[in-house]
Figure (cartoon, one colour):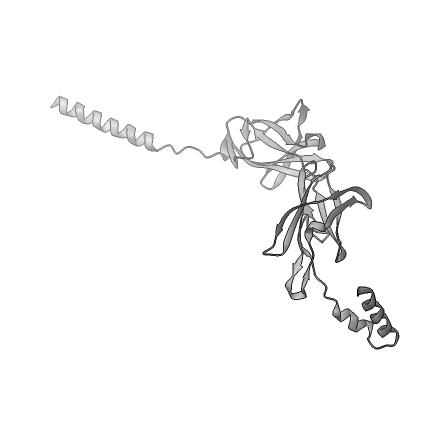
Length: 281
């Protein structure tokens, strides 16, 4: 019957009984793509995945569309993903059917992908669906591994400069230290800029020693200084990791001479004097 129908349609086309446009109107296109992960279709805004991690490729696909009077058994579908970078194939993975939800008409396929350890890579994922009764379809999405920046903690006189916005020092000589916590192999230099009144006073380059960077700087005079800590690295512009105010000498907050201690002291003196006066009487 199907063959006879095709012949009949062919004859109608030959003798212009119907047009291709009319036949196209008979065909209902069903969008089967409900959800994909990674699912960004914009290569300029890809989904971010971590280099060296394992993620779960996920496809939620429609297998029924009541408005189009269409159904296809998802148990017979083949779903696979071709992954490439810079036009070179990385891997092809066939997803496994996990769940068929008859209520929604959507089925789920998944498969683990071990993301390569390369950083700053844009991956192209071409998803393919082959059905035994409704043909094939494909869709392209994008994922990217970010460039991992170095990180760490600056310390001034042993004080964690990432946690304190300001310190007061009693000695003009500052002990400077930076301890990397991530991507230490990318660090090319660690520097501390010393600023006062909006003017750069000095740039101190710390010396690498084992797993840390150290150095010293002596403040030239009393006042409040801003210390800016930078990490230079192989991936781009220096990373600012410290902004600390250090106050020394005249610029420090001087203790108020007449405070609680003085009030209590005067009170004790008054009471003592009262006792002495009462004793003489």
